[in-house]
Length: 142
Ligand SMILES: [Zn+2]
Image (tube, rainbow, N blue to C red; front, side):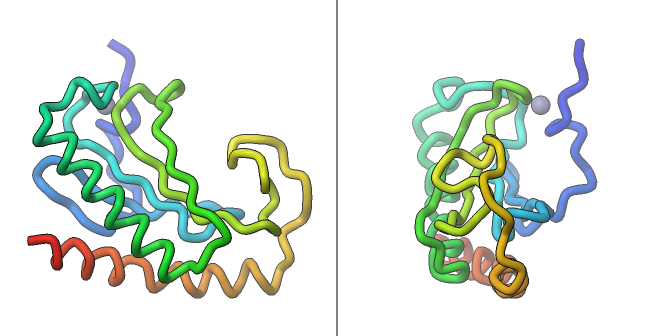
């Protein structure tokens, strides 16, 4: 069987680890604040989960969205679950700005502009507050 990079993943910056899922902050040079919510068990689709598990996963995705929205103050949040390259269930939570290199297309498209350096630095600073903001929201759930 082909190796799954999310089953093997030990290097990512883990913000929060639960029994069923984990949340990581992606170290992407052009997308500060990019988070991923990963289901721990290797399944590929939302409908592989029970109703309770689906609700749990989406509750976490929305907790991350809320934190990203308030900390990063983006123009838009992008939520995506694709898994075409890595068919292990995960959600991307991406703060988007009208001046980011890919806007208004998806983050997987070609860059259409250079990131204004000052803005990029500001947003990297903001992203450093995300782990505590996300953990606070998850603590408030229980
Ligand atoms: Zn996997």
